Image (cartoon, rainbow, N blue to C red; front, side, top):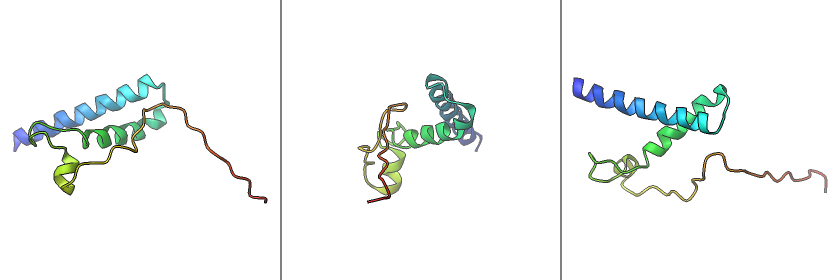
Length: 87
């Protein structure tokens, strides 16, 4: 049981490190910390792991490879189209 706890703690540490890197590299305010943490968890579940023989956790759970076409670079510019409500 303690070996599993150590693995979980290392995984948690890795995701927190990733979140810190995301926040600091993009100069994000601290109120975005939660989003950075969720992003690191999202990416981690879509990366191949050695214990799963090169499969991703997503692939193991859903029995299909994850679709990564929607992923974009963090911090990239976006533009929003505001449509006029008046015809």
